[in-house]
Image (tube, rainbow, N blue to C red; front, side):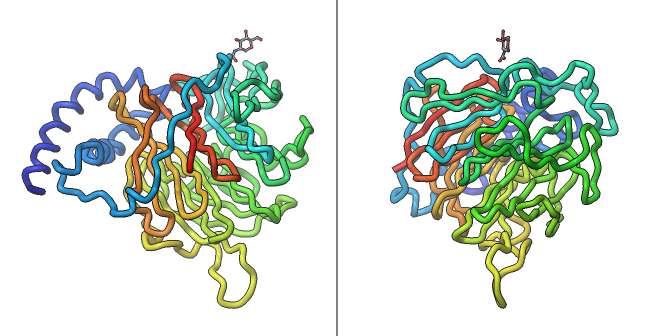
Amino acid sequence: MERYANVVVAMIALLCCLQPFSEAKSLKTQLEIDERQLLNVLPSWLERLRNNLPSSLTGRSVSPDVKSIRKPAEVLNWPSIELDVGQITGVAVDEKSNPVILHRGNVKWDGGSFNSAGHYAKVEDGPIKNDTIVTLDAATGSLVDHWGSNLFYMPHGLEVDAEGNTWVTDVALHQVFKFPKGSRVPSLTLGEAFVPGSDEKHFCKPTDVAVSSSGIFFVSDGYCNKRIMKFDPTGRLLDVYTGAFNIVHSVTLMEEKDALCVADREHSRIVCIHAGLKQGPGQPTFGSPYGSAGHKGKNVGRVFAVAAKGQQLYAVFGSIFLGMSDGKTFDLDSLNTLSRWTPSNGFGSPHDVAVSRDGEALYVVQIGPNSIHKFALE
Ligand SMILES: *[C@@H]1O[C@H](CO)[C@@H](O)[C@H](O)[C@H]1NC(C)=O
């Protein structure tokens, strides 16, 4: 059965792949990929295709845990208002459990956005004039707050920590910012504006931030570098973990388990390491492998973002095949798939995922269509 399934998969893949190659160029902006990366993603397309076929065809059994974990249930007709936003690249949940989104106004990442050295090519266009950070009411989705104009050029990752500080990464500025609760002026700015680099004082298109309750934070860096940087609360670099990453696109921290998981996007892998937050002899050090998958991580498909709560890791996947993007729930330790979920109309290009601190809601934002989706967890 397995052998025939592989033949069927290969035939379907061949038929499907020829067409997307010609369409891929126009999808490039939306999916943030270039031609070189297209060749890299081909194996993961096949993997995605295989993952999306019924398990009766592929011979793969669904993890026995699936039935005990309820799928995230889409909250219909949420938000209740029409949002006037551009590509929504980031989502976080604030300390009041309200979702906060980060969008790019009228700016889009396309082939002309960066030169070959990684410098942003549209500095003279100025920063985004729209309020890029928007807080929505968790229950209704109505507007609670909006700010963040004239600060960013191409913001990418968003985090709101337990104290209510807002963290943003900007891939055009190659910088990471921390805004104290209620402040529009950063209290911490890391990296040099518009200067990409790989030393201790520079980032290269940093993608995301994860913050511990003690204020120690982690930056995934990013599109060109292959590292996770660990900083103390004042912004002093503590440690660097360099992995064999191909676009480390998102990072999430599970503090109780000292686990830090990353979306290694173009390798189609989730990799989990220890965060090294526990002091004392015998405690795992930063960068040591977490869970059964080890430093190699697990091949799961073209993963854009990860978020964790309890024993569950939630991830969203992009696909060049229309209608094949999805979300999945994994067991944090084994990275075994527990469930696959999408909104009723399917996902287009999901870009980030966040879970509320109370574990009751999951949010996914997209860069096309520019939308936010809410799911109820048990
Ligand atoms: C940006 O702001 C302008 C001016 O207020 C508004 O007309 C436009 O709809 C906004 N666009 C987005 C994508 O937020």
